[in-house]
Image (cartoon, rainbow, N blue to C red; front, side, top):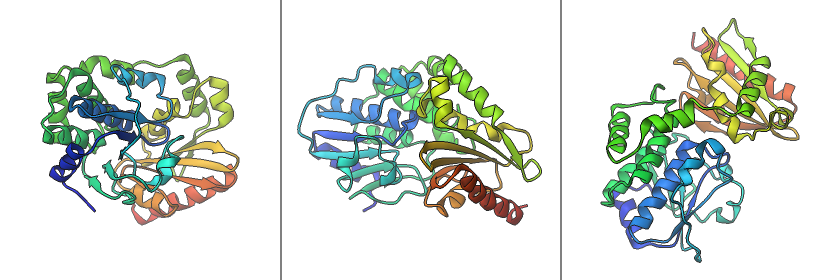
Length: 317
């Protein structure tokens, strides 16, 4: 069942002992939503804890103040997860048991008993932020920082097309509540480890340009992660790299996950709906940012993806 804010808020008021699920390879939005919701629930006197894979070092500041309770779970909530296939490591026991899913992906599969979905929200953090208001919980500085981080990361520091006036208004209110926006942006966007510089260099060296410069593709392999000393989550920001090349409409990032398993991320400028492209391969996301997982050799995956992109570019000149 699709819920509005009032219904979701009433559910949270009535329940306790929350497990909050993040998606695989957690980013700023799923983590900001989860830890922000944790701050909201604990301010209400509820017990809660976040279930996620290891938090990337760049985003570890979101855990400040987090003190998980030890309890027998009663209520399962997911944040920023469009499909159960995206559940993170350690969350498989909650498959089929999510009672409330909070999300902003148009490709959401409605796997939960109840769903609070706003596909036109720039970030799930916008939704959790407004839900906290519906609950009447004031924003602490730490909660405000969590929500601001999710909005900043999912909008590329407020420069992507998904950024709306409401996004800016909510971000400003988080600043008023005590979030140091400059410090967050410095940590997330302007600070890189040596490993992150190394993996970016490797990614650039792998770049291929196709369709008269309309598409660019990079590859990130397990060997590259190991050589540079980074995890897939730490290299997540590179998904937008090929789109930055002048003249490119579609940027494609192919990330090796395991033997014959590849995660494909697509980013478009304005002509192509990459969510539709990825949905043909069992994935989805947003019109300008989406992904899917494919099996096969690297060459086979490239052929499939480039074939689909080439046809889409021909159909949308």
